[in-house]
Image (tube, rainbow, N blue to C red; front, side):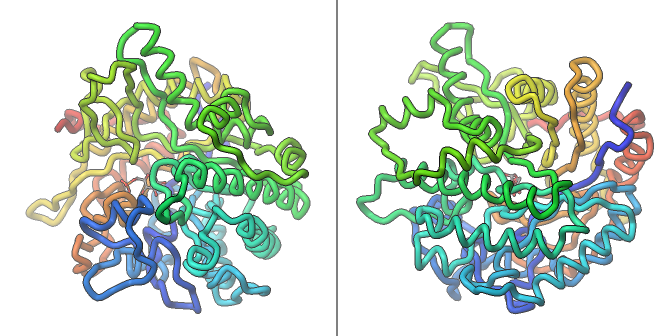
Length: 485
Ligand code: BG6
């Protein structure tokens, strides 16, 4: 009973939120590099405000981030000390193809990741690589309008070929796109989409999504040809949508809401556009441009496993009068009176994780991998400089317990768990440093000041104990309340 013996415990990061070194090693500029801190971040992230280059009046958190580019050895050593079996990271597309259009990859970029993977493997840590975690070369945004253009499919596959070939003996687990459904909710961040006046935004988003789905399937095909041992996963920003009441209208609305997100995984896992999506596109008057071979490509190249992020469940109502929303991983949701919430309003629902796991496993019958989960919180060092993050331990304890129940009591096949931001990093939604997820504290502030010094939080040793016991010992001696706003 319990987790499988080879369960992949670990942590997750993304290049654009931790690496920094945005001009080092001949790296090119990406969409996330022009995403500023402050009030303009959201409109730029939504593709509503044009910011195609950096200016003097803004601060851009990705440029230095936590400078993992120059600290990765120290950071991986700390992951190894916690007993990580797996480290999820992303490759920055612009380190490998700075403009996205070169015909040969940038050797400095490849070498950087090769050294990083070797460092992981030295400690027996399995790398799990996200090929595209939100970043698109800015050159492709400006020249082609990013994923709205079919051209991106070939360029992405070229990028995949370069990394699959180079790392075929070092990396086994790959994710094609991080949170592929993010394109609907934060399109410039999720896919480099900027909207011009007169654009049919829905159509642009779904056309770009189609290109990503085809690109994902072609990458899966190529991966299996290059190394049949490769395991390729899709990645969903997950969290089931509850109905506000048992009124059938509310229940049906919750099904529709979930389908908006399942749509992507339905295609990636089952290999075809589901009937409900075709009907919905028809109703919206959206006609997608598809090539003749697309259907076959999608059908023949489905993913090997389903990965997802889980921070919260969601709540919806069919009644337009009910509208008090709260934040939650970019998806606004109704406030659930049964749940507490983080300082950023993200509602905390450990049982929701078990519910989500069951839904995904029932729907796809493929192994699951939880590649993000965690609590973004303000950490304040005490008088001795220590961070006693019992609130984070409690959040993780309850979620890991729910995940264990899904495995032990419901029989869900789960390959691993990599909690988000195992080392503090830049928040994707707000650009803040003060929204911290890590077991490792990084001395860096919202305004970019700080020494970048790393130190262990209380949760560091707690997670070490969880991994050492393969999830059997979740105990924390300190009794604490979950965070509540
Ligand atoms: C997910 C992303 O949406 O949530 C991560 O894949 C992100 O990149 C994480 O950091 C947490 O969100 P935030 O906004 O708190 O950083």
